[in-house]
Length: 197
Length: 197
Image 1 (tube, each protein chain N blue to C red):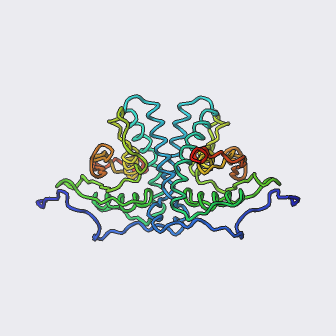
Image 2: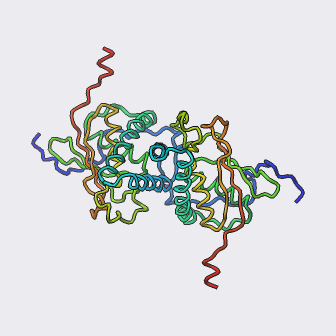
């Protein structure tokens, strides 16, 4: 491919279909403030438990992973989603399907490399930090929203897509926006399918 | 009062007004599965941290208290709520206003004593335990949803209403429904107001 794809906006006007949320889904809705505060309590508890920020980040990411693995089942069950034909489509589904469904926000998506396997999800406002003024001084390496990265990674892996998911920008660390980077790696081998053949 | 009030249903058809959720509120909506799973991760972490179920329950209740104190500000800001004229009205606001807003479910409310200061909120289905099959054998005294009790207590105390809030029935312990008991105590003295006089 010769076209430079750096930072080209990948937002809609393309021909994929947003997951259709089933009509019963509205019954599952809640206002997100309780979630945001409960998440804060979880982070605070982990900060009590672990001295090193890295250990807190790792714990949150691990928890997120398990959550993502379970959430993707719910997501697929509730969305009329066909197999994604490209990483770009997958990134859009995460942003406009999953983020919208589970956090009530829609990040914008940009592709950040020519190989078209690296994407950024960018949020002007991250609801998860709504009640957080700043990181405590002694916690400057805390990646407060690590759980989100883990959740994306877990959900992708559950559908046989390996990915690295990390925070690139974080307003709690002085950045302007919230930017989550997703790098799709090789497909995870589908051991189950192979075994059944 | 001579009328026996035991277990008399306190559900609507009365003349109080549900909080009017501002039109911007829908922007705060999310599907609750992420919350439910994150809450599960919090409980699991506390179970790692504390050997005694009572300590886990106490922690969840304490966290809920802090959350309730902050949530009530959000709730009052988003609802066109007038001062409640009775405990019964307050209980209805908790069920049909706060529970509906923050958990997406509406418990039924019953008054359980003649003095009319004890109420039960009853849920046929508690969304918080959606992904929980049963309590681990070694955790039979765990009050999984303690955070909810703490949150109600915190929110009430923040508006100068002291209350005891406990679980009366819990399906995770074999009960049929989820029942949260609220006993309104004497009003909390409003020290700030007094000081200003």
